[in-house]
Image 1 (cartoon, rainbow, N blue to C red):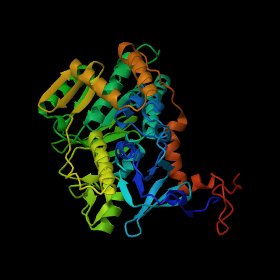
Image 2: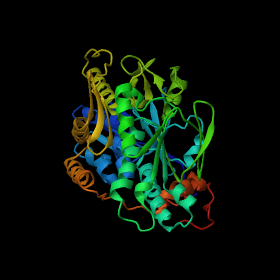
Image 3: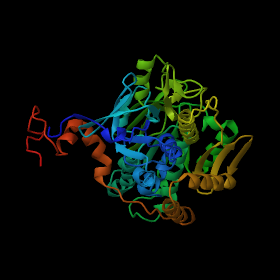
Image 4: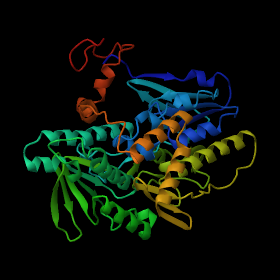
Length: 475
């Protein structure tokens, strides 16, 4: 190990003597909170696990070759570069001390302690395998850029390997794609794989017919898109069937391996689906920071890791700690971007009002702006208040809304360009896939986190072993 787990204090944050606000997370909640504090006389530190702000609703388009990762994940520093009171820090938060009012973050063995006067926790949520984390080895989720790039490699790679195969059973396995979870992410993913196989790749191969690929959408629930209601769910299911997606409901996954998965139907029958590519789009689990905060504050934490907050989104007994987005448990709010955006802005406003000596605004009230899910080109479903749309009108609404929330003019321009290529034509401009993308995650997990740290160089810990895990001196 060549890089010590040093603990340093972010001293520059305290030089001005102004109140210090620490924001955990660079997603919708954290970013919009930071932007809302732009002109406040505060020192803001935004800690992100990644160096970019991720527009997560479009991850499936990265995975299926429509968009590049840069179009949906602009650098957080670039977004906030004109915000002089804000400092962006890369690191994963490993500890929050509510008594000392400090946040500890670590990146590749480098540990930093950030003192705060006000804290906004917007760490979001990750994939949940409902207690079967071993499934992740063979069925990646859809929560990060790494996930999307790995899935892109798996999807396009499956067709390439099928072109080489001579055994029909192996060809069938390689050309079977299973998406677990019939929520918006699963529906959008299954629809785009179907379009990829039946339109984009239709004429690209000589030994296989991509249009014969089998795309299966599985869910233990009895309807598609449960949160949209039965009418829109049935419309989505019918359209998926028309474009070649097999929708299998009341089907619970019981095991996953490299060659396929086992499924238990409603009657208790267990059957086998042989498939090379499995995609997990079912369930979310809030950041582990929720349980950490619950242990220190006494606040209740539910099974999904969400922490109970006060009506003003603060922790019980800790009015200086604001929890927003997927981490908070408050009257069963949906896990959508708008909840995080509105929560982040509300928390920022509460901090500014406190700074100005004003009374609190009142309890947080979520304004539901509706839900949308695209099924295929020119077809989507939208649930907006009393209005329910399906088909082309819903698809146009989906395009407009998603463009509004993509950060940056350049990203909007290139996104529209690539949408034109994919939706009006047959192309996919982002079809590059490598073995590193597919197997990098598994290799790093096998090597362990210490391996990454041993390769970063930097100051050496005099008490640590000078040899890394490969028994070579680090450069």
